[in-house]
Length: 121
Image (cartoon, rainbow, N blue to C red):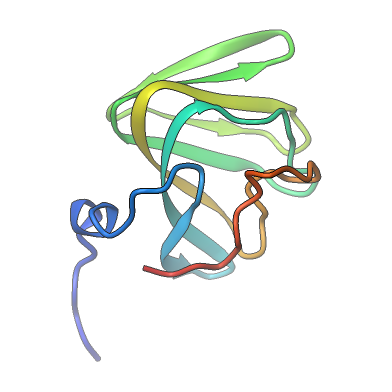
């Protein structure tokens, strides 16, 4: 067995596009994805799963139809399944998503920013 840590900064340095999650590891049926975000995303939900956002660097806002949550480096938030939300970052923000394999970044919403799924770095 190879015992190698996963360096998140090194993985983040391997891509520059925004809103395009990259898988760095798996645990059971879940994937750990790194993503760089900037500007507005689309309103969407995930009908069958919760979604965890962990801010590695920067600041972001997750808007809901009835409010918002602001996250900074070192903070996280879990969005319950079925809750419509829209992430936003005024400046580039680096985050980790934890969600089941096969989850599409835009949920049921088809968009020009729907990312290819299951891309590993």
